Image (cartoon, rainbow, N blue to C red; front, side, top):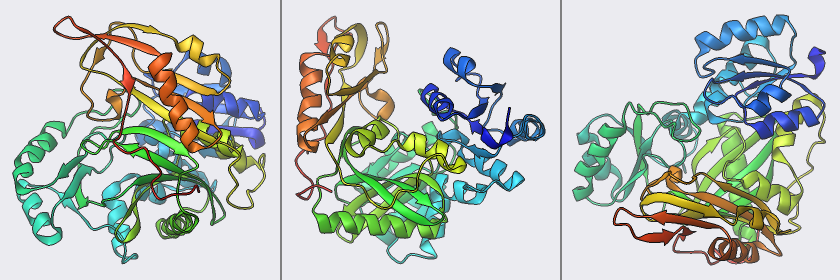
Length: 435
């Protein structure tokens, strides 16, 4: 095994390992015991099963792997592996994103502190330590404001404090969640710290970027449809339907943020809201986006961000010259349902046979419990499709959920209902045009 073509992955899904192998790379995989799959065992050249969120377990394993068989690059495309991938980069001088930058991005309070000292337009925030902090933040910044975990994902534990009457309820929810795991689907963290931050009233987008030695290429702006009560993500579309000038303002804001936060290389997924003061950075991640957004970007722009992230450290993909032009539209629509239990699932194979369908991914099967929608984990699945443009793709995804993909749910009263298209309350163009 040649170290010059060997990649160390800190956590990965099957797709990531498969694409690394398709690039001709040897793969050393650090995988959590709860996440290892038969496909990974088949594809990876070496696997070490351990809790890759714990540096005490990771360090001796990577010291041994560095000696034999050796590796040239280390990275993670999953949230739980980002910080320790950074530590490995620092330990061996591999380049790529180091620990301090990875921690600064992943820890939302650390990010807010860092930006507050450098960016006068940054969203104002404060740590939430006591019930009284909620009242103090309201006095300083007004209502509404947001409470959320410092290290959470998937919109879990995000609350909007709209008035003084909300404070007791939100504090009780924070106390209930503190110390609990987020691992209903994919993350491995325990929720501990919460923060408060200004509410930015406006449409939400994510920005998919790739950085080349400090030159930040904005690959796509993704339009996001978000539940206004709980902030669960209910759909995505590319290219975002924005006026050209507004889209460029978003790109410039994200480029400036990446400079300030210290990102120089690799993929990033940055969430933005366009409020009264213009585009505001909500949070960022030095990894690919979830929810099939990478599939949408590849369909619309012809750029596979997973392959770019894996291949760039080895010079296996070319440097992108600049923001690409979209050649199509693409959209992810999610399914939600009334509380109950899944009785049956039908239509998935039929949907997958359609030429315009990129993916159908369901997170439930018969017998599973359906919860009322509070965060991303409560969604039932997604359908990702292409279309002539973003609006056409949005409509097509809804048609497939309504007419083809059927999740039948039985409620506590014995009544039957069907999974339906998640609606955000606004699916019209956010600011006209397309970015």
